[in-house]
Image (cartoon, rainbow, N blue to C red):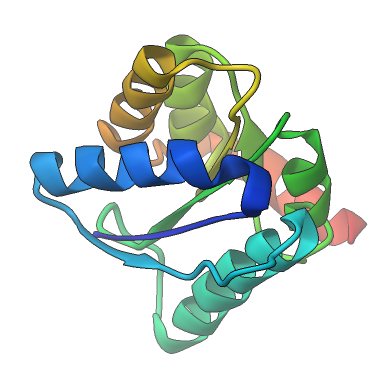
Length: 150
């Protein structure tokens, strides 16, 4: 699994902390951030990368790439990610939500707000998000319903 990570200017500090955590956990990652990004830019590059990768895969697997997007409060990045058809993003501020949104909602993007979660909680949310894949099965019905809405 590869992790695409990006942040706007306000989320840079937490992004750099999480990059170190990703390295410690042994995952491959790519930082897609550029100087001067706002939350729309940082969210868009991650969504576009995942959608590009989706078009090359026959089916989603547990080792499919995921994204992490960070801004000041999380809400802006979450709204930007939600504009992309086929992307399920989750703005979380606790470990259980990070885990369950991946398992039951098939979230591919973890959105965090630097001013909402501290360093330790952000690391814990990241670990929870990465610890399991998507359960599929009965949960796929909701994903299909969401994709029909857009």
